[in-house]
Image (cartoon, rainbow, N blue to C red; front, side):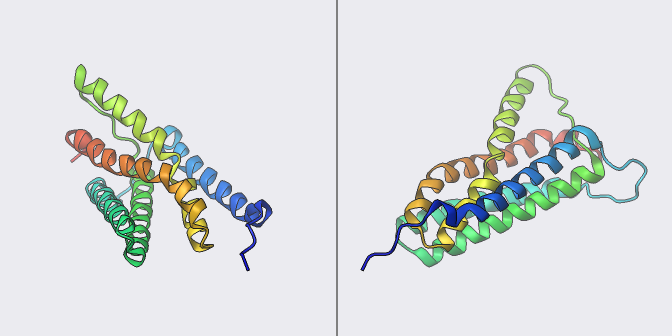
Length: 183
């Protein structure tokens, strides 16, 4: 007896939820970066967070690689552990990133010439690709939870390299911005 193929309608509620969460996260982030400008005159000091966030990005990247290696070796339990941990590290990063920018606003890059061009290209690719992480990661987790591993693999074929790139470039962006963070 074979299992019935999943119907698209069985995923409808999840995809609506996923869209709402993804749009809400993007909207909040856009507002913080483009319009909010930080909380002027506050005594809250979260200037330690960019370093913590870079560590969280590096941790996520390491866990993504470990998860990839585990699944290639068919170590499913280890893969699950590494991927849930990578998601947790990235979620903690997002919370820290939002908190920092809510309090301190955006940090402007002060470099000039070629290094500025390299920074802006790197930042643009980092930001554009990061838009896909929340919806794709939630979708990958959904299919894994439903044990629809063929659909899970189709999503992760795109998600894994994007997520890894964004995690690594997040660290590089931090290192390039580090001299410009206020003391």
